[in-house]
Image (cartoon, rainbow, N blue to C red):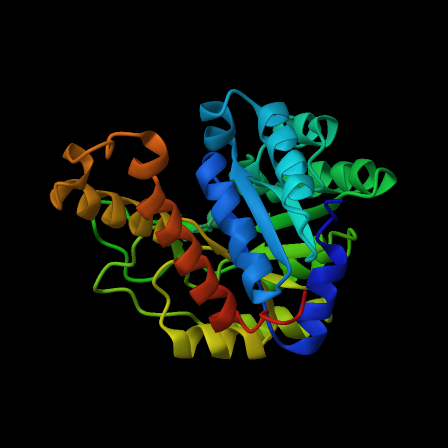
Length: 288
Ligand code: G3H
Ligand code: ZN
C-alpha cells in the first residue's frame, strides 16, 4: 500500500539524509522510479505536477496507475504519491483521487495571509484523511531570459508561521531555482537555511529545483535540515538524451526498432539510472 510522506521524512530529518521526490509524466516514469527505489531499497516520493496530471488525463488516472503498479510490482519499500505545486482546488481533487500527499503552493496567492489561511484549512482536511501536506513560503524562481544571479530567499519568520500550522514538510527558497541553473547562479544560501532551520525545529525542509545542484551543496543542505529534494528536469534530460541516442544510432530503423516497447526502453533505463544515482547521493539508499 502507498503511504503518506510524513514518517519517511521525519526519519530522514532525524537521520540526516533526504528522500528524493521525482516527477512522473507517464507509465515509463512511474515504473522507472519504482524500480530505482526497490533496487536501492530506498523510500521514495513519486510526485506529479498539475500539468503532468492533465497530460495523463487527470489525477484519478495517475492515482490508479501508481497504486496498481505499486501492487503489481510487489514493492517492499515505502512509496508516497504526492501532488507537486498544487493550487487549493487541485489539492482537494488529489485528496479525492487517492493521492497520499499533497503540496499546496500558496506562494502565488495575493498575500501571505491568504497562503496562511488556505494552508491552515488544507492541513485540517489532509490530516483528517491521513494525507501529508507540504506548504511553500516565498517563491522558487526559474530562469527568465537566461539570467538568474540568485533564486528567491524565504523569510524565516514566515517559515516559522507556516510550520506552526502543522504542515508535514516545508518548501522554502534558499537561492534554488527550477530548471537548469544558469552559469551566473550564485549557489544555495546556507545562512538563510540556518536561519529557517533555527525557527522551524524538526520540520523536514524541502529543496525544490534539485536538478544540477553540485554534490557538495546537496550534502551541506542535507546536513542543515533539507529532508526532501525534488528532481524533475534532470530526469527529463536523461530520458531525452537516451532516446536521441537510440534514434541517432539507427536502431529505430532496424528490425522492429519502431516498437514502442523497444523505442522507449533506453529512455526508461536512463530515468531509472539517474534516479538511483540521486537516491545514493541523497543518502536514502538502504533506508526503505
Ligand atoms: O517541484 C519540482 C522541482 O522543484 C523540480 O525542479 O526541475 O529543477 O529539478 P527541477
Ligand atoms: Zn518545485
